[in-house]
Length: 586
Image 1 (cartoon, rainbow, N blue to C red):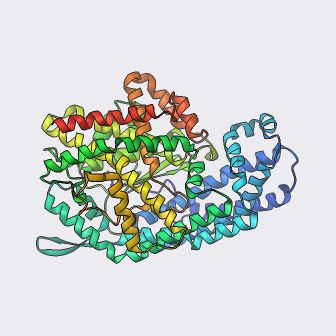
Image 2: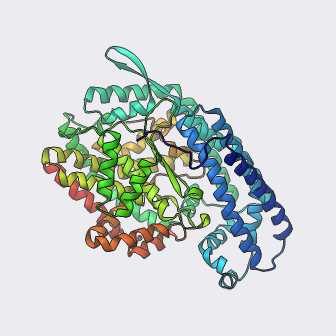
Image 3: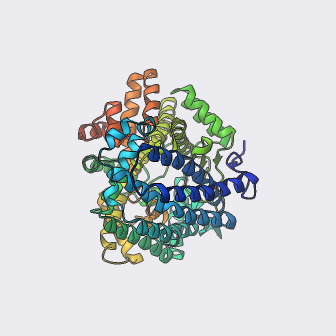
């Protein structure tokens, strides 16, 4: 079983006949759509025009995403692949040629007075009712065709370029670290994974080497971050949003009341997590927990998994939920959808990319064999399963927002973690229990620090660019406010803004609170599954299948949850609290 993914089902190569043919088709689609839009969208006649453009948009964006996903995946596995980089830049630049037509259509939709009557008269429009209504909701924030076209083109040499620079910096950064008295160079992703090593000296050494290594890229990273956030602020003001956060909430299909209720529940839970950190510190021989021991394993469970063993463990436990989920995961492993091997030039961390046109996904991870890596694979397979449940939806009905994006992934990792806890003796159970609590703490406590950091960053960026020292100070302040006395303030992580790619997504600001939402929403779903068992599976699959055509509040209602009620969030946090109390008593 290969640990490097195969992209052959997408394209064999950039030089393949299929890639060249699709690239030609891509440009022909742009030409046809632009010509048709110019000739037909100047005045309203009937719903046939809307039906035509909806059908063509589905085909066009399916094709575009297939092309650019192949290029981006190739680049993620090898940051120095010049052909992939060139193709990503070319596609990102050339897709902007459709911007004017896209804006024409959105304005055309936005200016129709009685849209409901029109929708009811067309079976095709009924299928896209949510997409159409969302376009109308965003109509007031549209600029002129010329302005939108200029912005789309300028982003290619603006925020998109800064994003690629940051990815190149972190994926090629080699960290100097001492091993057996000899200084060796290791990829950043490898050094960061040492935070899970059972040897405290290695963890501390890796932490110090990592922090020191950022000196090589801190100025470039700060420039990238300032530029990306500066662009986001400028565009939000131009379009009439009250703030960058407001735009994020609208794009996330999330009511502000739901977010504020979630944040209130998170703040209430912080003292509980600080008790956990205090207990872990004592177990590791500290007065207060240093950042380098945040992920330190405790207990006797230090099993290393081969890639094949990880596959078997995941598939076996997914099968306790459903055959469909287990078979899906096994297929992903067997057909080489996963790139698992850490190596120089490969992007760090993990992600899942859906290629809707071929009804497949690809997963990147950096697998080193520890249990946390197994959980990461389960997490990313959850993302892929979510996309699998949407495979029969049209492209325009398949795009779900950030907060719901972590639901299936966290649900899947929960299945694997709970299975491990049930089968281990107490001396080994403590390891997995602590690992689960630690992961939950990251998604609540650390995510809250990232939310605070980004809020302050955007506020200050409105006044001007921030220096490296200012960024470090804001990060440390955010960590202190979130972790409190749970961490040793002498050993925090001032460069967390440099190593987390989410800050560098120009069109996805505040990519932090969605993780907390996903965790706690998923905890609630998992509790429902425990109560309902087999009868829950079909309901769960249907829930995932509607996430591209419902807002977050409606998705909650579908499954019977009021997301504006803090009692729901407290109930999910209570599950974590019970585990923390169990851990403290050990």
